Length: 301
Image (cartoon, rainbow, N blue to C red; front, side):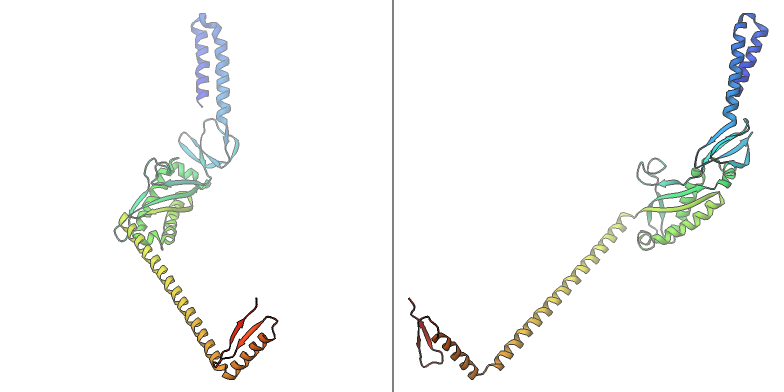
């Protein structure tokens, strides 16, 4: 549109020069040609609009927003129409305590009070997209800065409104998923009223006060020590049971041996051994004494 206006001005300047001053007559035709070229370029750039993939175009003329939207591709429109492009792909908005991680510079984490009066800090990422059919209403009611006017304030408010129903420890551990599902539902309803679709809500990190965190760590350490001691006691019991079974086996063995061997059997075994010695090719001296056990001398040289 700007080129059209400039082209018209140049064209009329050329006509004015022709009428008022003959000294500049040589510039009239070039200025006319330049004015016509600028007008044609202005019309071509104003009439032909390119909408990229994943975007839509919202038309407005003299401030009045049109309900029909332009889809991706090349489109010919009225040169007086202004086209605002809106991204309809999945977008994310991150609020984090890390300096360069969030959409806002600096610490942008959400700080909220819990049911037990403690302050916790949350890092959060919101995944959302714009409904194409509701894009004209977004332009009319909010504008293109819907991130700062809808996504950010609604998310932060709903988190603070729902965190007061949970204790700090519950948010950090057992009820984290429940809390995330609860705030997802409430934020989803408000987003839908504004033409946005909430796809996912990621509670990335919850930081507890230092005193609470230290208490939790001590509790976990005590539980681990108790589990370790229980394991040691169980192992000692198993070892004691093993030794008892082993001792019982040895006692049973000794009892069987002592009850099963008689004097006659021992004498028989002794005779068999002596018989083997006598028949052995090795030279032996057997001294029979008064005792029950003979003395055997080996005189092999």
